Length: 260
Image 1 (cartoon, one colour):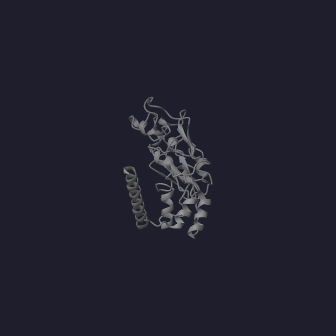
Image 2 (tube, one colour):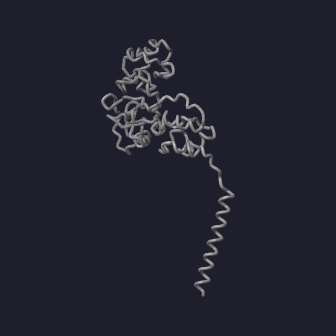
Image 3 (tube, one colour):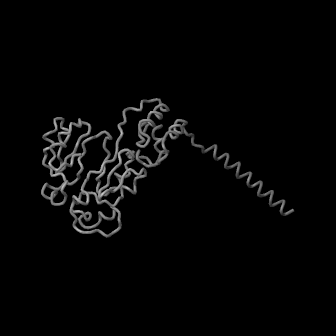
């Protein structure tokens, strides 16, 4: 009899709890826009954060609310943007593919070293060493691969002491940009043919003493550009990709050949 009573009590308690939870679920249910579910279905699911949101769920919600553009996913690209635009009933607009670019070519054979670093093999740790690392150029790539670790797409590797991006694998998620402690990586148009492969802000003589392929701020490139697409700021050349016509005159005249 005790067993029967205990079983009945447990059963009735479970039933009451189930009813209470069911009522609470209905009362506090948050309605989800069907468009959000549809948009989320088209997103790749990498949850890389390249869109500026915590993950694909966050981006889907933002798109439906009008807080993010339909082409906000850098991984999905134009094809995903087109599908999402169909759900939202708006145009996907023009979305030019971008890729990460490392503004340094100071490989081991082209840059001097002040000392040998024997600490933790990570750029974020190495940059804390005297002189911001062992290389003579305080602005150059440290080559310990913090960007490589951050990349989920195997699109960046360290080659001869400098990080190099595989354009075909890069999805412009921006993780490597955030991981680089020297801010050497930026997102550039995939079709850009001329890029300044240096970040040193030192003057010419100091640059040459540290690296044989550093920008010396001579401004010959600016004098050749007829479209005003290249300027020298803080002794380093910068290209405005909106103005650049890829004529190549800046690269031809660069005495140290750091414009690829």
